[in-house]
Image (cartoon, rainbow, N blue to C red; front, side, top):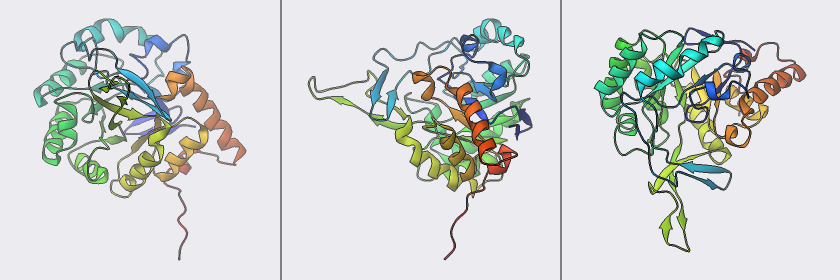
Length: 304
């Protein structure tokens, strides 16, 4: 079940996605943290962020909309309080999601995190659809993305993963730009921009009006984007978007992902990541797959 990703060795290709696993330590009594490939923290910014006002999450058909607004404690408190307890799990890959409104803020977070032990990699969040500046602005403009990734790569002392937005004309093109700028891997996709309206009140159901759509509803779209991106870049891809079952994970691996991230499923089942890691191993055994890594990019396209 081991896979290699941007210089990291993962015990499993199953990783808990950012924004759905807190700072990681909250799950230590629920999930065996060393039984999964690792987890990505919620977005960490230079200063604490309060996030948006409620309502911030609503259920949709086959998924959910969220507009949390990247609420977090800020990099200083993360390093002093949230990160140290994870030293109890040395085999768990802690990937820190990094967010900023400006290039300087991104770099400031990375430089501060460089001084902290126990972090495996950074995931550069250039794709959050529920903040009014920063993130998504970088992820949707090729020039801005290239500049940010190159600056972040120069500043980083750890592998750099770039989390891409699906809310662009061609995510494969943006992935290629990120790769050429120095990204060690890309993760895709983040949530799709959407909204919901209450017909009785005639008002948006989210306080932010719009939010990010996730869950099984987006899986076919995300899968297609992973497939297209895999044909454009030679760096590893972390695939995500509506993964609930082992079969879902296998689809993303066949499409070209090296590893996968599980997000919304953790809201329905807090043990979803560990359960999926075990069920994927069982699937491989029952299908004669000796190494899960052999599934990456093994999609067979009929000829003629």
